[in-house]
Image 1 (cartoon, rainbow over the protein chains, first blue to last red):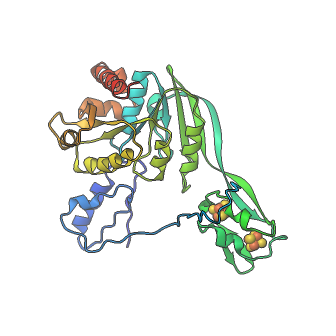
Image 2: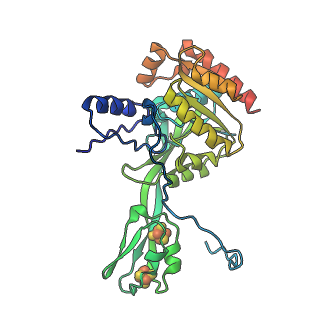
Image 3: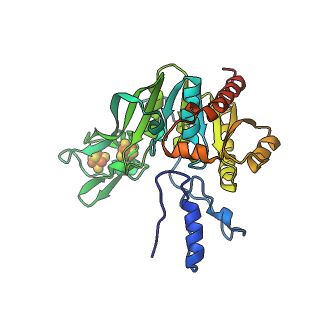
Length: 73
Length: 275
Ligand code: SF4
Ligand code: SF4
């Protein structure tokens, strides 16, 4: 079972609700998807077990020796 | 002069601060929080202009397409895929970059427009009000924010930004000359404020802080401001009255107990931004 907690408006208490409910339900994995400003972890003291970079899109790199600066776009 | 109001954390009071300061300063209000624009609930402007925001996405002429797959290979956003005897277009993933047409040697690609949101503008009392609205379910807010800010007339604006520190906020910051960061005195508010400060610093623009829901104590945000020599423009009190006015969609600056506070903050802001 996966339950999502969402709100539309910011600051209405998503994180508070998740922390409280997950403590009561126990034995549940908590996931913070608010990747822009994740702060569920502030409720818990502890340390990172694993940390790795996430790679999404690619970044363009220009080879100056080949570029003819056509500015086509 | 364009001034961004941002926060990092959602719900700290960006809209409360921006709408009330815009009214107090007599400058235009711009709602860039296009996913949840609710500044107009407080200002209630009469809308004079509405227009759609369009983005383009490719369509493929099946008669000309030779199924070479070059377009799908060129697309860095996975908006095109070759599936058997067909090129599938995922229009919501398309970033309107134009690479697929450059890649197509068969001239089989053309672009069509689709609306992803709206711009609205109007007047509330003496001030101009603008906002962008992203359609529900659309993944990309940037084109709406960019169009909104690009088309603003030359005047002074307070720009109510989206929460967070991602490209939506970054887009808005490209158009401003100064920033006001709104936060609340909680671990969460401070945590996200620090992220917002880091972001603003990248733009080398002057900035300062306003604390909302302030307890009147020497709280952690004030300690942060002192330690980092960040200007504190003022506070909005944590009071039943302020919360009650807010919940009814009323303006604090029109209430006798809060008016003076906003005038004071406005003065400090003008002085700090030499405006
Ligand atoms: S315009 Fe760009 S993002 Fe859109 S489908 Fe073509 S290559 Fe992909
Ligand atoms: S690049 Fe042109 S011809 Fe090749 S698959 Fe794409 S649309 Fe068809």
